[in-house]
Structure formats: structure tokens, C-alpha cells
Amino acid sequence: GQNIDQPTEMTATEGAIVQINCTYQTSGFNGLFWYQQHAGEAPTFLSYNVLDGLEEKGRFSSFLSRSKGYSYLLLKELQMKDSASYLCAVILDQTGANNLFFGTGTRLTVIP
Amino acid sequence: DAGITQSPRYKITETGRQVTLMCHQTWSHSYMFWYRQDLGHGLRLIYYSAAADITDKGEVPDGYVVSRSKTENFPLTLESATRSQTSVYFCASRGTDNYGYTFGSGTRLTVV
Image (cartoon, rainbow over all chains, first blue to last red; front, side, top):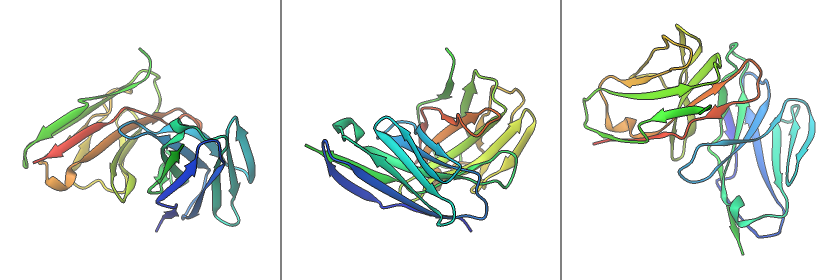
């Protein structure tokens, strides 16, 4: 079976740095996505990792270690608008469709 | 406007009724997906399609039917709605690379 683990909830202070971890055990792997989802809205793309290492994009960075089945999303200089759920998703290479398998998400609350 | 649109945005239906959720994309993406999102489960794949007239089951297909007669449309039908199908449904599409999974705004369905 497939499994992705993320913390359910996290709280951090405005201006701080927060790291959201994701561990996965899947039968296939063809890359990993991080999505942001505000309450009542659609998930929106944040990052994509297929090779080991760190990908940086502005205030957001994502790291992948395929050998450890581990990824994290790093958010710097937190802003109130970063309060949202963060979804880790693995691309399963079972078929050409490369379907996404999602974790249950981490709800981040940014406090003043 | 370019993008992916879902309709209706909200729907309340009675147990046993048939209901169809619509999804339309303007990018001519080959791949389209239907996910449902429930508390504690994250996003789960219902059905996906690799092209017109090609569809396949995902993780939770029971009780759902899909069709794809045109590339741009991918409707999801609940043939006889049950309360367990109360959920938020997201349609997504992507092109031929692994980037660019884009989600629609979602349909919140309540079965009473």
C-alpha cells in the first residue's frame, strides 16, 4: 500500500521560519509535489522535486531525499497569509498518467 | 478565459438521486483527474483519463461513473448518491510533463 505521513497541525510566529516534514512509503516514485491550500480553495502548486537536494523559490524551499523517503518544505519570513494547509504528494509511476498520491496535509497557523 | 472550471460550486442532493459534476479545461491537456477531499483522508483519486475515450479507476471509484467524449470535458456522475459521498470534489488536469497539475475550484457536494 501507499503511505505519506505529515504532521497534522503546526503553529509558528510571523517572521519566523517553519519546516514541514513529509515521509513517504510508496510502491513507485516519480517525483514529489508540495501544494498550498487555503480553506475553501483549490490546492495551488508550490514546488516539485524529482532529484535529491534542495529547490529554492523565494521564501519557499523544498528538500528531497529519495533514499530516506523524506521531504520537507521550508517557509521563511512567515506572513499571516501563509496560514493554510500544506499538502505533500508523490507521483506514483504506476501508469503513464503519473497519478498523485496525497498525504492528509499539515495545517499551519501563523500567529502575530 | 483559459483555465479549469468546475460546476456547480455547491450542490445539495438527496440520497438516491443521480448528480453530475462538470469539469472543463481550455488547455487541451491530455490528462484529467477527479479527486475527493475529506477530513482525515486528504485528497483521494476517484478516476482519471489519459485522453478522450480513455478512462481508468483510481483509489476510490465505487459509486462513480466518468466519461470523456471530448478532451476538454470530464464529467463525474454519482449514479445513486449516498451520504458517504458528501465531500469536496476537485477536478485537475495536466499536460504531458509532470509539472502543471492544476486544480479547479472544487464542488462542495452534500447528500442529505
